[in-house]
Amino acid sequence: CCYRIKAFIETNDEDNDTTEKQNVLDNTTTTSSSSSSSNIIKSQALLFSKRSGVDLVIFLGKTGYATSDIAPEIAESLIIKNAPSLAIAITMLVTQRGGSNISLGTSTYRAVAGSDGNSLILTLPGDISTALHVLQKAYPVICQICREMKR
Image 1 (cartoon, rainbow, N blue to C red):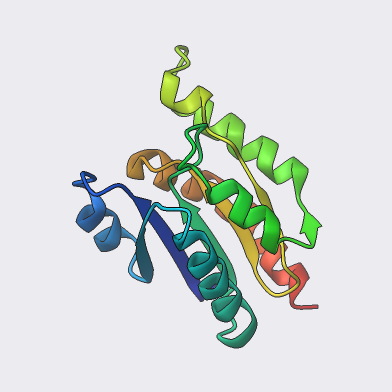
Image 2 (image 1 turned 180 degrees about the vertical axis):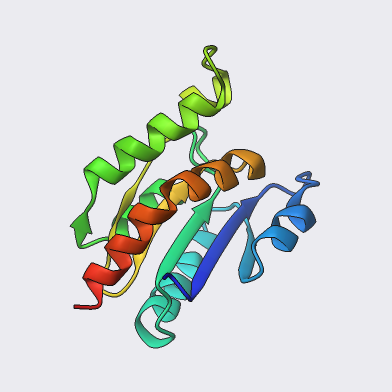
C-alpha cells in the first residue's frame, strides 16, 4: 500500500550498524547528527514528500533526550496534521518490544507521527530490530492512513 518510503537514518560517527540499516531499508539517506544537518534533513524530507510522491517518511534514530537527538523536532516541523493516536500506538509497540522490562532505550524514545499533507511522517528508534517490529505490527494502520491521504 505504501509504495514509496524514504528513511532518514541519524547516526553518530561511531555508529557501526548503519550499513545493516541501509540493507534493510532500501531507500535511505544517512546523515550525521549535528545542528547544521537539521536544516538539510528537513529540506530533503520536504523535497521527497512534495516532489517525489513519497508515501512514508521515517526518521530512524536520534529520538532520545540528548542535545543531538533532533529527529522529533524535525519531524514536528514538517507535520501539519498530527496523528497522536498513531504515536501512542507506536510507543506502545516500542515498549512492548522490550517485554515486561522497560529498557532505558525504549523509555527514552520520543514518538512523533503525522502528515504533511502528502506523506505520513514517523519517528522510530534507531534500533533496527525494534523499528522493523513496529513497522511490521503497524503496517495495516500505516496503509490505511496512506490510502486516506490519497483521497
